[in-house]
Length: 464
Ligand code: ARG
Image (cartoon, protein in one colour):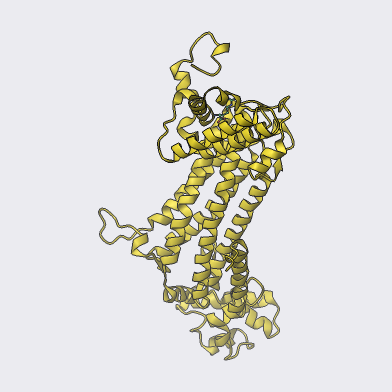
């Protein structure tokens, strides 16, 4: 029999029952639901809304249910629709009529709001922890490759020389923003909606500050209608996760390119690549491709939630039950992708010689050649034009800027001297770029230090 049978003349159709039921996916909120109920019952007892001994009985009953669920001894019933009604039903089954007092001054609307927030609150530090692990891998790769010169690209055309370390630190910076975005989201969601009731609180002397405190929230939410209808925090989380995945998808794309025979800048460890069922020569970057692909799933969850919430009137609407699968799937996907991605990067081999060769072949020192003339007094635009002509000459003769003779150079400008060859060396080009943020060793070391400090600030050394 349904809780609301008193109001109804008929049983719920089984089709509707199945359709309405969310227990198949919200069962994972059992811990948060019990935690929320324990706080609520405790507060009800303290405020004299129920008798203290009743509160105690409820709390004990809930704790026992939690232990049994964790021991795998509880089966939820779709008849009871969702996790909230399932647990309440179990409680009443077990402790009798006192169980029926738990829902005083509460609604499933504030209950689901508090459960989901608690869940997200617990997952965010887990996710940032995984991203920090990935940061640690990038730091290691950067330290090992401060002198590994490679071409930097614009339009996927060889552009200017950089190093693998500089490249790794580019991603490390994106990931730092991802971590702080998630931290911001956590700060904003750290308010407790419990006590908002269905939408307008209640006439009982409920102490919302107390339940907020018991559940470890900074404070209660300020408006009860907003409390039960707000899913901003989840949208914010999914957008932060989407941006994180966007970064991983870009990184994945580069790894996929770098693994190709056309580049061969890196080689994935055998343990992090796969073969083909038909082509014996293949070694495929499946992990990177799947991370790139799963990015679509996370964006999908963000779109789901934005679209579910669009134009919903205040306050709670059943549409909002659709939030959970999107939230869970996005979190699960990110928690699946980040560690495997980190391990893949950790174990890949950097092919420094191939990077160097590609860097030498693409006129990526052309800007440096122009800068050489500028240092000898020529205006940049003029120098740019001259080097353009030199490159054109090289392309016709199959030369590079390093193989042109001094005579070739001087035929175009007598500002050229034998020191031009030194100026065009890739290591000179990289290490000349000492500007803050640049690829020179000393600049990259600063970037490494900055990320190291960031990681350390999030992971204080355990006290000894
Ligand atoms: N299962 C519901 C959800 O996830 C819980 C809230 C139900 N509230 C209601 N008024 N029907 O949103």
